[in-house]
Length: 473
Ligand SMILES: [Zn+2]
Image: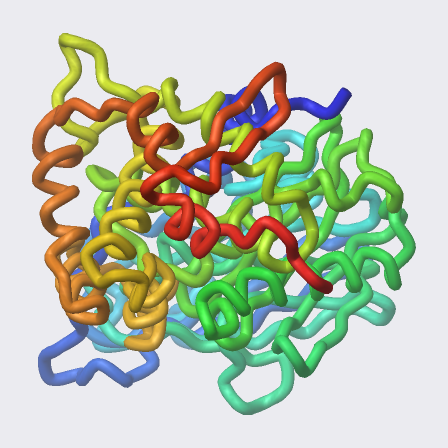
């Protein structure tokens, strides 16, 4: 029996949550160097064992120490600073290197990526997948810990037979990529190894597949295309226009997904061991992550908003696309949403950490918003109109938005104040919600996992507008 979404979402907290906890970003680049200057420039040579030799040139005012992500530091070796015609060994924590840098300095170092993937085995840092290694540049590109506002650029030169792919935007020349340094800590995924890469035009997807997946490439790519199409249809816009999808294998039964948006949108899907071509349609993780790709990043305090959006939109988008039965979506909402209600000691959803509140409490916000927008506008608008307006303003995972802007643009599109009002009720406060009354008004109930509908219910038309019962496809 397939694991229920309610139970699976509990697992997803570990699978997905950390990617939507943005670190504070640096201020907008400014000053004499200008925001567009390349201040960190890298030449990365990849050997056949997927270890890296890197030459890095830093320009402009910089301070602090040299660093890579903490979990990766022990795999960084032989760091040397160019001094005249020679090289001098440098410790990462040492400050003295700055004295030798007058405006610009060049380092070289070795990074044991293979060992990092094997020992850290974390999708956020580095992880191996049978002939390929996935690791974002923040793992293997050394940088000064302070200063250096502008852009970074790297060129990758792989050994014969090794391929490289990243979600960071290309910079023109082959295998050269570029992004703002302020986006570095959340830099998009990258992969090395025996990858199969490709591009689909409509919807636009770039993909990189690891070797020896449980699915054929054809099935895997068709699956990605189907999920992207469902989310694109809901938002009226492809997630980020050019998302890079990485697919590897997972060691656990369930599929895991992570989204990183620094410098370009990327989604890393790790296919669970129980997944086969026959049961791919039960796998909703890709669509969930694509909702994150499509929507702006928010402060960590509003994780419930991001996760609630993905929890609510994913099944509706997939049902509208004919991938799952609408009846099943209603049953899962009726059974799942009570887990999102606040207890007597809870505050509002803002700042909530509990998975039930974050995922289902957030989903409840969006269901209520969808219903209320349709009621107030007499069916002229729904939640998707608000979300489409946000996405149309280049709101996607590459951008961090204040929540107020999301609410303002969303409400502006429907000519209501529903999103702001509901944030006051459920985000700032722990407002009471009578779910039984809501589903009675919508005319839908779940009996032993089976949905029954009452078409005489006052909001039956709203219910069917959210999710048409018969999808002709
Ligand atoms: Zn998520």
